[in-house]
Image (cartoon, rainbow, N blue to C red):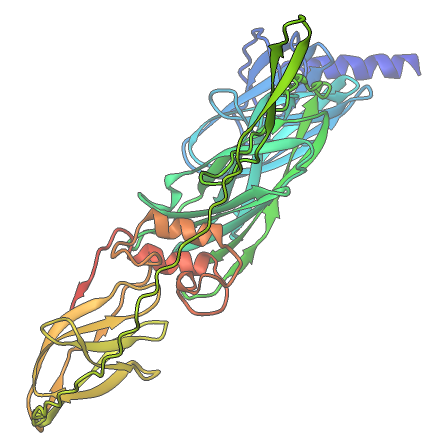
Length: 495
């Protein structure tokens, strides 16, 4: 039994210096790592071959980091299997700067573009020898959203960076995406939400929250831009409030520009908060003495009469009090009566001749929008001559006396269109068909971030109606998508 055990140990040491069936280049160095322990020695090694078997050893004081390079994007699976001891291996996938991408226990699956990476192996518990393999995996065609935290553990009062990414977008890309993130509001505070250029430059963004442990980030590519590649969509800071552990999950609904939202599968992350909750410091509030209130006597009021004693002396030297009385003044109002004058108005009747109306002309056309549209005719003095609400298909027809008018088409939340038309007696004039640009929610003739802000502030509600651009009864990313198509456009549109 002893000889068998000795043979196993010798085999493990032999395997430690070469992969089974393949050669391996190994370099060793030491560094300081603060993922879980600040004084662990890290042995650096290279992974050179797919499907090879590599042998390693880790303990509480020794970690191993396996480096590898990708010349192109790969999906891969790394498996670490203990072969001796009580080791429970923990794997960290890191980028070229040593920043964590993701981690897992025992097995780790990921898809990464060309670049330099490393797999750090350390014990979640125990220690011992292990066998590591890295294999290519079939590329998943399923789109998803993932949440990553770096670092995965911080002290109370410190902040971690959370990255939310879209993966495996279809070839046609996504026009817009709505992310809904949840977390434990008692453990962390969310701030500094920053959207990346994944949806192109100058994307339209609407943010609702954070509040009550959740927030929403809606992003839509402007002027035809879409998200067509995998990558980070936005980041935010998570600051520890008290010790504990919280899951952070961001779910996503995506649109391809067809006014339909589709749920994506999501992967959450976990953040550990170390330390104790800071004790609040109270500053005493100085006591404020009450200020007396003075009541002023209105001018013109009567002051009560008082009797004031005056002291005099008699010949024998004894004092005698003499009282002087101030007469009481009584004010009696005096009224002057003005005789009433009665006058009888004189009415002069002037008969004016009514102008003979000119024969009417008509105006027809079509205005398209996802909201009800009003077409109005204005005289040269800007007074309203005629107005009509367009039909469901956008067509309209109205009549007015012959003449030249300004024609204006308006819809709530849309830039207006403006042109001119000359109506001829007894004949019809036709305006060209036009579509109103969606997004001018605040009705200031420009579609900008302030309109997107209104969508964010009123997300998942129905008011104000101007922000419900697709007129479906709820304000959300689909309305932001319509706004983004016309981002930075000004009006009124020439008709």
